[in-house]
Image (cartoon, rainbow, N blue to C red; front, side, top):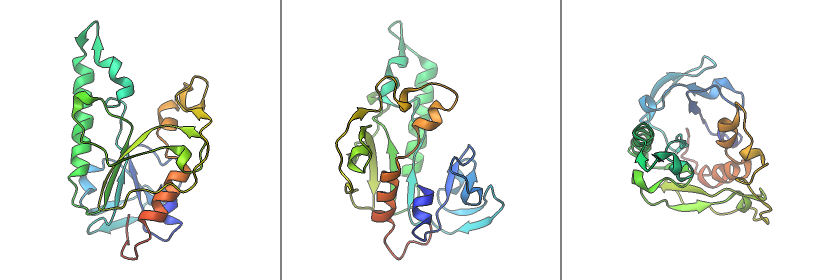
Length: 204
């Protein structure tokens, strides 16, 4: 996502508690996103000191492991509520709410379908990788504020469901969660093209 916006001349940064998966530590803020949601000063992992008065656009991908509907089966064990899992899901919803409350006119949150028990608001739209040049299905929800609905750019025939056994998405290993969280290139390019074409954007 960051690379797609940078390629179009925007001062974009990524933020995560992990190392940047795509390189470019000079664009990456390693740490908690909450202190900088409304702007501020920070040092990138590459040692660059940056001050942002206010973000022009925020595109967030908060962790969904404990809030996703796909993991709802873990909420109940033996017909009893798994209190630890429920608590962690509530924390995930609280992070979603904190991001949505950021002082930013243009804001987008991306996540899979959440479990109804956590009370997420209704998403603005649903997108699929096959609408942006990737021949697979993986339903993704977008909550959008201040930006237009994302328009498909390259509709192709979906040939595989990412959730099918044997696909890269379902393979195990230490990198499974990280790999499954990656944004499809076609979707990133569409967001950068459609939401980053305003000349007033100086930082994203």
